[in-house]
Amino acid sequence: MAALPTSADLSALMGRNLDSEQAVQVLAIVTSMAKAHTRGRGFDANGDPVAEIRAVILTASARLLSNAKGLLYDESVGPESISYRSAFNGWTLVERMCLDRYRINAL
Image (cartoon, rainbow, N blue to C red; front, side, top):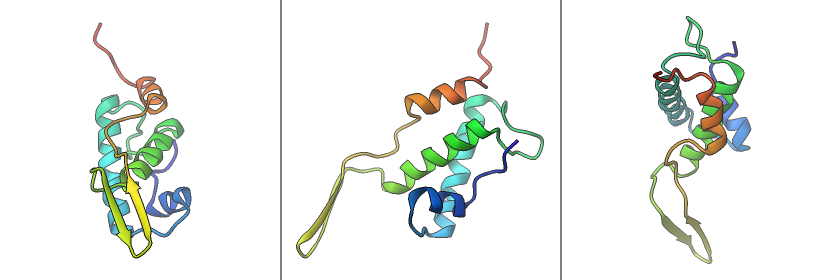
């Protein structure tokens, strides 16, 4: 089993320094969602995920942190501007495929 992702792992993935408290909270939320989706499968007794689920937690957390407001909006400061046109709204197809490997489905 792989260790739970840390704020340092998320910072390295995103290539920038992050607010550690916010990163820890986002990782906890996404980990809880992944654990709920798989109904606890793919996690050991210590709560550590397998490598595939760890990757899902990191990528989904990066998307959530990139637009934590979850809204479509624009920001301008002087001549510079940025537009946020996407937000975290669930698992991507690849993330879902990884999580579904561990999900227990009703028969």
